[in-house]
Length: 151
Length: 416
Image (cartoon, each protein chain N blue to C red):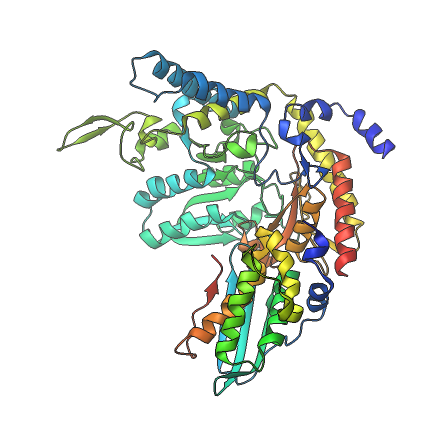
C-alpha cells in the first residue's frame, strides 16, 4: 500500500485543475450524487446529441480522489455514445473493485485510478461520479433524475 | 523533542504508566507506532476491561436474573455490580436511576419516546442548540412530528460557543424540554450546563444532557448538575461498544411508560393485563448486553483508580499544545475556538480535503476522524463540508501531537 500509488501525478493534477468543472447551460440532463458518509456532493450535467455525450461538466465538493475521478471521467466520456460510456463505467468499476482486473493500459489516464483499489475506504470517493453518470445514461426520463447515493 | 519530554515528565500525571494499561497503543500501523487521536469517536480499552469481559465469557456467562443456578447468579451479581459502580461514578441517588442502554443514542431516543411523546402537546417547544450531534437532533424531530411540538435551536457564535443568554432568551412558557450537549463532539466546546440546567429548572423545563463527549474528560456528578436526564456511552469512556447509560431522576422515570415491551420489564403477564417491573428493569426489556455492562463496570473501576484530576489536567495541556502547534501550520484553520474546550481540535487545511488528509495521516500511523462528525448543521454553520478532528485521551503525548503536525505538513506539500 503506497501513498504515491493512490495520489499519482495525474490525480494530483486533475485535483488541482479539474477539467470540465462548472455549470453547463441548457443541459439535457442534470443529476446529483452524494456520499453521505463523508459529505461529498457533485452535480453532473450533460448534453446528448442523438445518442452521443456532446458535452459534460461537473461541480461540487469532494476530496482529491473524487474530484480527479470526475474530471478524468468527463474527459473520457465526452464524445462517446451512451453505450460506450456505460461500457467504460463497467470497466472502471472493475478497475476500482476487482483485484483480478486486467491491466488498464487501454484506459489511458483513467488507469491512474487503479491505485484506489488498495484503499477500500476510498473506493466510493472514486466511484461516486461514475455511478452518477451511469444513472443518467440508464434513465428513461432525463428530466427528473433522482439523486444518486453511495450508501 | 528533549524539552518536550522533560516538560512531560514534570507533570504530575504519569502518561507512560497510563499507556501501559492499553495494549493496543503498542501496535504498529503501516510500520509506524500507532498515534491514536480518534478518542472522541471511540476510546481504547484498558487491559482490565478486556480481562473483565474475558473472565465473564470464559467462567461466568449465563443469562442474568431469575436463574437459580450458580452461573446465572454470578452473571447477575457482576452485571448489577457494574450498575452500582456507575451509580457511584456519576453520584446518582439510587441504582434505580441507572438504566443500561445500547449507548447515548438509545438513551436519548428512550427519553424522546417515553417521556416526551406522551407528555408534549401541539405547540410545545423542545429547545436544543446549534452544535448538537445528530443523535440529539433527530430523536426530537421525530417527537415533533408525532406530537406537533416545535424544535427550537439556540444559536452559537463564530467561535462555536453557545451562550447561556442565547438559550435563556428562547425559554418561554411553551418550552417543555431542554436537550443539549455537555461537550460538542465536532468542536470541543464545553457548554455551561450547570447554569443552563439551573435556568431551565427555574422555569419548570425538563433537562437532558448528552454527555457522550464529557464523561471521559471531566467529573460528572448528576446531583450537582441537577439535570433530569444524562446520557453517555461506554465505549467513549474506555469501555465496550453497545452499552451505555441513561441516568434519569427516579421521580420522572417512575412516571414514564416503558419504552419497549418484553421479558425482564414485567412483573406479571396475562393476556388481559401486564404489570410492569420496577426501575431500572422497567426500561430494560430483553436480555441485555451482559458482557458490555460488565466491561463498562470495569472501565468505571479503572477510571476510579486513576488520579482523574491529574489525567484531565494532562488532557488540557494536550489541548493547549495541539492548539499552539497546529496554529503554526500554514493554511490550517481550527474550527471551534471557544474559550472553554475539551481536548479535541477540529480543523481544515487550505488545499487539502479532510479525507485525503485522513488517508495520508493513516500512512504515518496516525488515526484521526474526518467528515461531518454527525453534526451537519455545525459544518453548514462554518461553511465547510467536513473537518479533520484530533481528539485526545489522557494516554496521548505531546510527541504524538508533534507527529500529527509533521504529517499535516507532509500532506500539505503533496497537494499545495
